[in-house]
Amino acid sequence: MEHSTAAVALQTFLAQADAQFHHLAQELGHWVLTSPRTLAEIEQHTLATVKEVGQQMLAGVCQVAAAGAPPPPTTRCACGHQAAYQRQRSAQVRTVLGPISIQRAYYHCTACHQGLAPLDRHLGYCAGSTSAGLDEVLALLGATADSFASASALLEKLTLVHICPNVVRAVTETLGQVLQAEEQAVVQAAWAQGTVPPASATPTQLYISMDGVLVHTEAQWREYKLGSVYTTTTRPSTTHPGRDDVCAQEISYVGDVAEAADFGQLLWCEAARRGVCTAQEVVVLADGAHWIWHLADEHFPEATQIVDWYHASHYVWQAAHAIYGEGTPLAKRWATRRLAELWAGQVPKVLRALGKAPQRAAVQEASTYYTYHQQRMCYADYRARGLQIGSGTMESGCKQIATARLKQAGMIWSLAGVRAVAAVRTWLKSDRWAEAMTLRPLRQRTYQRLAA
Image 1: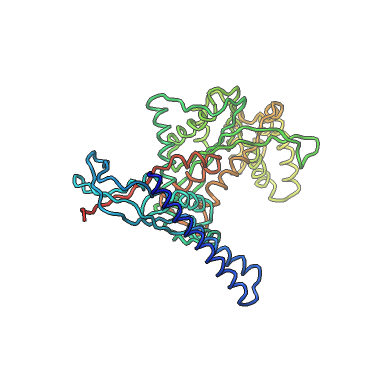
Image 2: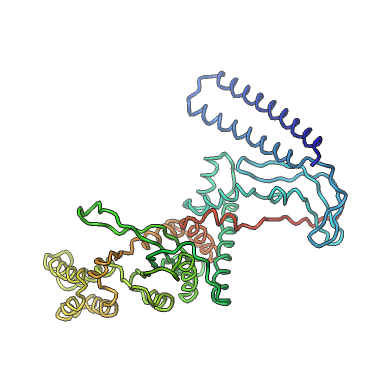
């Protein structure tokens, strides 16, 4: 950039900015004197003025960045040939401050018939699209608001910038697809090449949990499988004085609408990233679904396996109600005894009591459940070792990742949409948002115009 050209551009920008700010400040001052105004009215009008100033400032700064030496007669095209300078051309881009226009040098390649503007890549934007900053905000709102329409409305309320819901959807799903591709690249490297993902830490103890949530897609209801990897810490209980609670921390998630085998590979890669290969102790904590324990046996064979206490106790109450009637004192008394036995890890006593009870469906179901999982119900031993026995972390994850966004009333998703939006939410809830932003490719606009 030539110093003289840059200096002229900078002085022009400063003069224009000063004049624009003075003009808008005058308008704001005159407006407030025309009639009595409330603070809310002044606040809203000032916000609109600040946005207008910011929009003009942003466009002016970009124009300063575009200033410099006269454009060279040719520049190298992506096809390898030389593209010839045509003219100065205006580019429109939507930003967090509203749409702006940037004048920059435009070139045309006669070999591939593509047009290009070197400044677009230099500034990192795509003409006719949205800026990286606005893309990030749209993806964040698109993944966290109740719907894409709600995200659009929230954006306009906060920034006075209107972006239609379909653009919010496109930006959110595009980011989700990028994150999915990154996850699958890690899985492919691990299974095809034996490349273990680099560990982010060396934990002493690592928990792994899994569950599934049904989501309504265009074709049918599909199971979205979610896995969490986390460590724990012990804190004084707020509900049981004198006791300690084992609380989850540093939680990360992965999920997909996929077969169990494919999901298992994805979860193992996340566990490897979190340090499962060097952890001194690994715990798999989940409900009783068979696919979960098959994956646990396959990918974490040395782990301590624990069936969630709340799921286990639920079967006691179902059996008690089937035997003595729901809500009866006898049902409560029988269930209390069985729960005490279960809490002590005495599953054989629970099974004997079930064997003596009338063999109703709920009783037989409970008996089958405890027989199959009794080696995962040594609750007294787990508590003595300071292990977590409740899968509330996983239940919360299912609500945060899937239910809160993917199961709103009336929602019917495309399969690609479910997978993409859920991917954005898992990275966000895993505190990997900054990393996700670095994975976004620079979008480029292709000009299929002949030279003028």
